[in-house]
Length: 113
Length: 117
Image 1 (cartoon, rainbow over the protein chains, first blue to last red):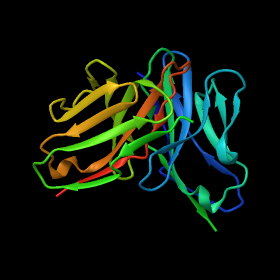
Image 2 (cartoon, chains in turn orange, blue; image 1 turned 30 degrees about the horizontal axis):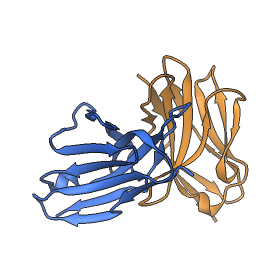
Image 3 (cartoon, each protein chain N blue to C red; image 1 turned 180 degrees about the vertical axis):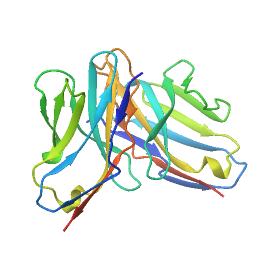
């Protein structure tokens, strides 16, 4: 079964500094990888996905993620964090042919002004 | 495009009553919808997969008689929490998978906060 690990509970970063949120995954087939963001008492908003093609994926709000097959990672990055980026970030994976998403535990990102 | 709505956004009820939550895909059709439960500061737990015109598939440990799911049309799925108790208080989120969908993407609703007194 597919699974996702987000090793850090919280990521603190100063406004204007680069932001990285880590994610590693485990699947038996080809992975479909997703990042979502959640603001308090709200549903999940889609940021970006990797299905196939270029390993570097660009998404919404200036976020990008790099698929690394050898390290089974899909870290989320943003070159310059904003205070408004403070939220809960979820990495998710789905195996090809399977329509169920497995979510990581989530990372709370705190951007300090 | 790809907007999913949930109603109500927040509900408070007394213990023993039943609560219905609606999930609608507003601008696309969805053969498959999913229901998740989220506890504070925790990840999403998949409760069940709802398929239009057929019975829902429940995850292990989820009581199907407690959480009734109906997917009567391609744009609407409902979750009914029957005889609700305080331990059912949670944030319930639905998602919908467009039909057809090349990569089985899911689009999420804004969630429903259920508080059982």
